[in-house]
Image (cartoon, helix red, strand yellow):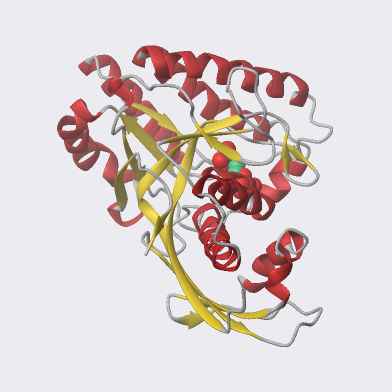
Length: 347
Ligand code: PMV
């Protein structure tokens, strides 16, 4: 079908891994399977305007972030388009103008690549559906996740919700190294509407990017065992999520977070992304959990910020605890209250 000019807008979420992806081979194939909660409030809204141009070998696009031309993000997006061109040859036929906005504060240390790239992938799939109206929603989600993965691995988990698995794993039916799949089993009520408060400990640029971190897992002395352990943890958490054992959830999720950072501490060269306040918060969470017999726990991504996870029935008490005891460890007292969400939305 001939399309001269068309625009699509998608909102796609960020996600937080419970079992972590850290280590990959080419092209963006994970060394172990991972699972994440899809977030609700932390998202990107992206509009892509497509305008027909002469077919050429050039991928032509402009990028605006929060209304301003964004040259420093351009190389990452250009690389993304290069990686996906063989799967989306129509990108050579259009001049693309990308307008993107995040719901979370700029440079808050919350990775925007997952939500940002999955939003562009969904806009591309909308164009593809316009060209080929027979495409099913299932195919669009799968291919969007496949494309997003080529930009940033964890972005493959930002299309659906509330729980997404990426990486081929025998305990998860339909799972694949090539795209994320919605957790295919019924999840226990206690994990419905799970809460995630993101404590912004350090909003600065990370000293070591996740690309460099993943690469340091090649020749890492503990890599082999780590990949085995992550896959075992995925089988375990799959059971926990179905059966509703929150105590086991807490210890598995915290162990995953600390193991991720242990891999960084034992890389060559080694590095530390946690900050003193990350540890202050972790200790406070442990004290609170013991004193109140709470099911609060933490997880970390590749940075100093702390994600505080808790069941919905503890929302009021934990929010009060965060406000009175933990906010002081955040930069400018900033934290974001979020909860589990359901994935990409078209506007
Ligand atoms: O998607 P990447 O390449 O930025 O890697 C993300 C890795 C972690 O956030 C640390 C873990 C994960 O599974 O999301």
